[in-house]
Amino acid sequence: MAATDSSRLRARRPSTLGLLGKQVAYQLKLLMRSPMAAFATLVIPLMVLLAVNLLYSGTRLSSRGGISYAQFFTPAMVAFAVINACYMSVISATTLARDQGILKRIRSTPLPSWAYMTGRIVSSALVASVGAVVVIAVGTGVYGFHVIWAGVPAAVLALAVAMFCFCSLGLAVSVLVPSAESAVPIAWGTMLPLCFISDVFQPIDNAPHWLRTIASFFPLRPFADDLESAFNPITGTRAIHPAHLELIALWGLAAAAFALLAFRFEPDGRHRRDHGSHRPPVFAANRVRELLEPRGRREPRPQREERARLPRARTPRRAARGTVDAQTEWIEGPAPAEDSSVPPDATGAAPESPAPEPSAATPSQSPNA
Image (cartoon, rainbow, N blue to C red):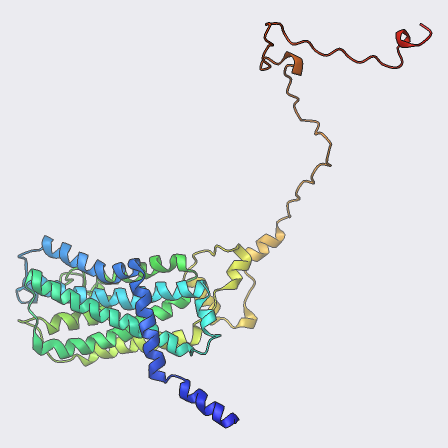
């Protein structure tokens, strides 16, 4: 009987691909129900594409063989759309789910943790693919961008490796982000400077050599160069650049290894104990030091020592009920009989105050008087 029940349970249990497919569909549904996430992922690259191409309409780049600015800037916006969907969105969504306790509750369900994280990464890659197609369609229809079909295979391979790299980088950076409030500033602050020096917002052919060397060390510059080279009809090449793909893949593997070793599914409770529900937006330095130090050798934090030295403020005791403080001010006013708010009677005479009742101790009321 037990064997029959176990066989029925195995038959009802969904397959691995079924779990992954449902998780991807669930993450896409969450994205569609969040207008701000869809706006940041899909609309922002289109807005930048339209605005910059309007400013540089008719401009040609002599350093790139005399191609139009749209032929350079459209592949750059494809790279920017991939960054938005795979890096910035992963950082903000992961830290928010961690702070809200969603990741902690996921671990107590039958859904494996790897299925949840893989579903999130695959959904981000699908959104990035849709964003890349939309950017290319708008550039082709509005600004005359020419699609070089011979370079599509190299561009697709570069897109696949870059999606894996930036999703892994997003998970790795989410380990260092202290709270969801600081996720978006950290994501934009770490990626926008690279966009300006990596042939994304403008060509850097006239930039200093040291700046181009630094940009070539990060994965964004090789990725943007591969896309621009695949769709350059004059000086571009349709071949795959192995050195660029190796650099992008190494960044992705290193980020994935760091995320697997240091990723946490629960919010950092230590900051809540020390500083209440609002945690300080401390980034990178303290977090990296805490991760690298052994747990048994961690030095006490200076904030705890300072708080221990400060004397505790004593709260004043409440006064006894019915007592009056010596500093209480008495408010003087008219007697109840002299209150002007009491209306006079019909004859116009002021109301008479009732005569006081005679006391029992007066001699006039004694029986002998």
